[in-house]
Image 1 (cartoon, rainbow, N blue to C red):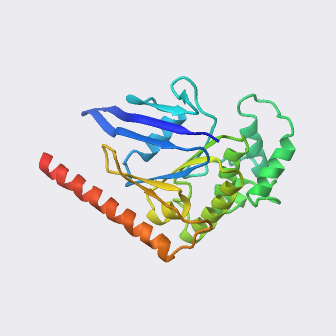
Image 2 (cartoon, rainbow, N blue to C red):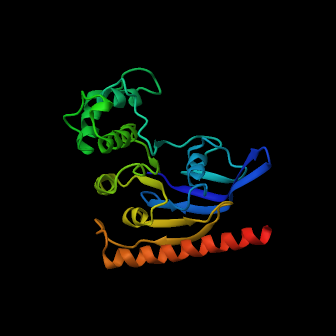
Image 3 (spheres, helix red, strand yellow):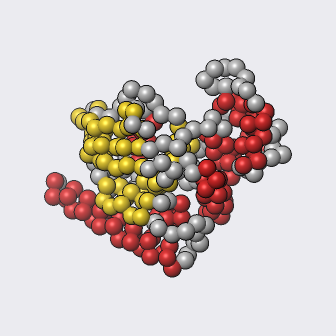
Length: 261
């Protein structure tokens, strides 16, 4: 399990029209074993934040430390789960997992078959070892993607809208499975979403991002026991609180934009 300290993170990109500020002076911490959701509109810099945590993008200003070490000096031990599963279609389920295990050395690893079997059981995929990717459903492909990240035993999971392309019934099932899996080992999770219901169902804390240049509009604690029930009064109250903050941040952004024009 990892802890994260983000201090004054600012990220700007060069464009044909000059520097574009996507993230503007954002600071927050994530504790060991905590499940934190970054919630905000499309283009608000949520994925950019994940990429900076992973060390895939350099901060323009500010610092990110994972377990006390700057990601500029050493990339953290993380698993990255994307919106699309991005599996290798000409390999079977177990071959995709084997490829992930061997990615760093190119050689078989100790207890490889046992590790693959264990992670398939954890993700309710036992029996699908020999199936190719086109032979399983979209929801199962998402589970294979999560299994691929888990199998390398990362301290930190970075999840970028992994259920965003799924129908709501499948997404709800996978959210429930994710929570059950997470509760067994309490890995640190930073989860990107634009779905308020999803954020409240999953998170210990929800960080609400403004439109870019992104700042944090509010941090909302979701102090409810798990498993949570969709539509419960307690969950609905937090969803309403988040929606109110979100709408205020959008209104403020619109007013500021009109003032500039």
